[in-house]
Length: 191
Image: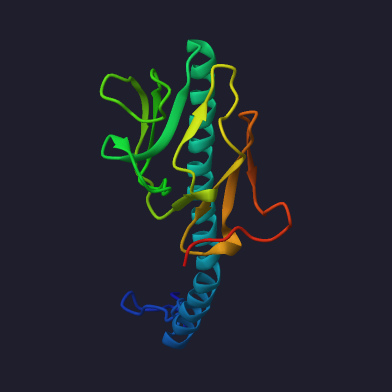
């Protein structure tokens, strides 16, 4: 005897299971959430990137000061750092076009044709560097001291004075980085 099962399905019959996926409304909601999170996180990432650029520029200038100072001591001669103006010392105290270091053979603090340029730093992008008291030169003497009064080199970017930082160069020739002025106020960026 042959028994036919009533549960037997034809090979053409495909069981229908519900589709597993997202509806259009669910996708729109997910995109809206990601968009909100992205817009909340973007300013933070931009701030981190701007801080990193500024820190790099500050460290580069501190390294230049230390190098000029060590060369003055090593060579027993004055070294000068000045803002770069196409291979010459600029007449303005704006350092964001880069700077150069030279051995001041005749002690006049001016780069003469016969004097040796020992370092050139390229222009800075998106950062303005202004020296306090409009200092256009930094001279290190053979003992490592900086000629003149203490000087501040203020680093500003598009975020303004709140995020400005500075290098303070003492007469002893030591450089330190400061987030605020000695009175606790922000460094002032040009408008």
